[in-house]
Structure formats: C-alpha cells, structure tokens
Amino acid sequence: MTEPKEHVLDWLRDAHAMEQQAEQMLKAQSGRLKHYPQLKARIDQHLEGTLGQQKIVAECIERLGGSTSTVKDLGGKLMAFAHAAGGMTMTDEVVKGAIMSYVFENLEIASYTALIAAAKRCGDLETKAACERILPQEQAMAQWLLEHIPSISTEYLQRSASGQEAKK
Ligand code: MG
Ligand code: FE
Image (cartoon, rainbow, N blue to C red; front, side, top):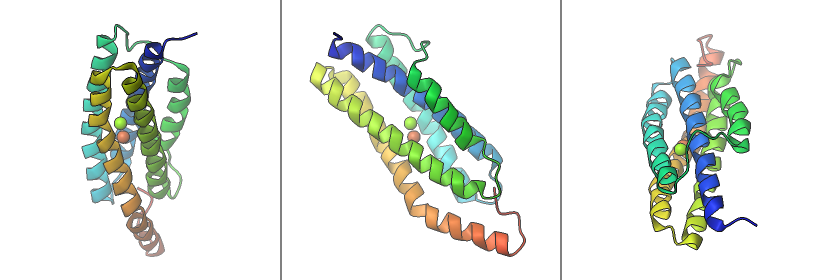
C-alpha cells in the first residue's frame, strides 16, 4: 500500500527528470537550428520557461521533504527519447524535431494534468497551484508547434527543392 502523497512526490520527481530532459532537448535543437529563426526563438523562449519550471517543481519536492537527486524509471526512459529528439541529424531533422517536440509537450501536458488531480486529491493545494502555473506554458508550446508544423514543413520542402541547406 502506498499513500497518495507518496505518489505525488514520485510524480513530481518524474516531472523534474522530464524537465531536465526537456532542457537538454531544447538546448540541442536550438544549438543546431540555422535557417528557421522563428522556430529557434520559440524554442529559446520555452527553454527559459523550462528552467523556471524546474525550479517550481524542485520547490514542491523539497517542501514535501523529498530530494531531486533520485532518478526514477521514467527519467531514464525519457532520457532516450529526448536525447534522440535533440540529437537528430537526419536530412529532415527540423521537421522531425518539431514533431518530436510536439509529442514531448503533450507528455508534459498529460503529466501535469495527472499531478494536478493527484495533488487535489491529497489536499496539497500548493503543488496543485504550482502545476497549474506550469501547465499553460506546455499547452502554449504544444499549440505553437502544431500551428507552425505546416509552415516549417513547407519551408523545408522549398529550401530542399532549391538546393539550399534545409535540414536545420
Ligand atoms: Mg516543461
Ligand atoms: Fe515543455
């Protein structure tokens, strides 16, 4: 048997690991992009937000008496995904990167949605409020990516067809 509060702490640790992976992925993507300044700027903006999210989640963990040093299972699995998403070097990496980023943002949305419900169930209103501050940032990034995947894709096609470097 595990108390609901212990699960909340566990899930916060997962969220912290997730945000660390988000940071690595966003940094890698931003560092490679050359010809897609709008995408790069949005990634950099979300990177700033992600660092703030890490702090918010860490504060929740500490308030509940936990530590952020424990890497849990999910952290390891996400690492592989985010590493792949950030380090892609295939010929259409900008398009694949945008798709992977959209998937990752939706993972974050689902994770914070679960945490909000769990924290509410425990009466942990501080954790609930913290996750409710983070969630709209993930939703905004996911929405931006979805709205811009068409133009990113067509710009990629156009650059590729005209013999310009297209992939990054
Ligand atoms: Mg995040
Ligand atoms: Fe995010």
